[in-house]
Length: 175
Image (cartoon, rainbow, N blue to C red; front, side, top):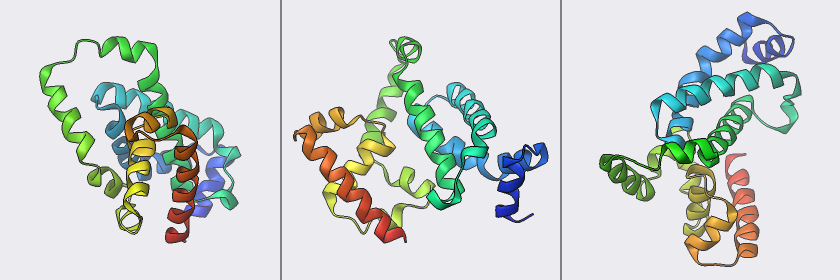
């Protein structure tokens, strides 16, 4: 079944189409979730939530607004960020093991694997360094715009403007 037909079938409530969508996208979706959450068990829970949202919200997907895979990844990214910002998640992470800190420090400096996991590396390489840093913080590390402004020591308004400009540049590179 072609992808367009598969999406139409999913939108009409076809369970077989949903199973096929899961087979096609679950591994890469899990990779995005895990890169943000860094906990296998919680990442698996969020993956289930994401696919439940895909099933429930499939009729709202609009092909004119972007690719289906991008829509799925946005759901996954947003669900992951919501999870790490939740009070329950933060309370569970209060007493981290020391080996987690090494991974966190390593992850702060290495984003190429995250970007390459979804095929964006070649497009992000075309951007200027500030855009790379902004996209990394906002989209791959889950920082808020306020946290990004604090991290980069620039005004919040500047972060918002540069983010918009950088996303526009990224879009023009992809198209």
